[in-house]
Image (tube, rainbow, N blue to C red; front, side, top):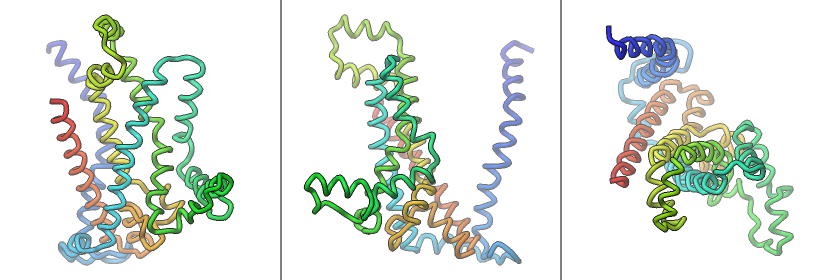
Length: 291
């Protein structure tokens, strides 16, 4: 047996336990959930086979598509909010001075907090009577801008984008800093000798060299946004009038509040399919951009 074959065999054996655990707790439940989508089941008792009725109801339900639209707003806020801000911060904080380390820790701190805590904090910030946001607007002479931020269906979804962006900038910033630090210093020296300015260097040299990391960040943004639940559930519970309903909260409400486990399974399967389509589409577009 060659050395390469022995190394591959060792890697396969070492990864096998982790793969079996992943298959048991992730892959198999996904297919099991899709299977239960074909049944009318209350969680207890016998399940009645109803074919594609649950999936057809998902496609026809306007609340499902409203939830999908809200999720797309979260995806857009994450991809075009978290990633650019994290990239700018990574470029500015790439060096390891004491001040930059403090700023990095401050930016990363929201990620350490529980999403429930983040939701409670921002719930108080947005509170129409005692919230600091309306207090600041009032003291700045902008009382006309005061809103019931989480109770107005017209703006509640947009108000929720701010804490979502704020909460998840840190991990992407750390990813980009690691990618930037892996760029050889010789490339930086060569760009200075050629007289390349900092802005041109960013778009012509730096971004292409960390493009794979950016693609990973976009995948994480999309997948994380489509399964967003806890922060929204704590702050609004999907209301008012389903204005902040997301796919995950819609699935949760139908499964555990209405006890339609079969329909909830169909919704969760639809979420997985939509996630795969969006991730595949984003990777295709970003691959074409590189070319």
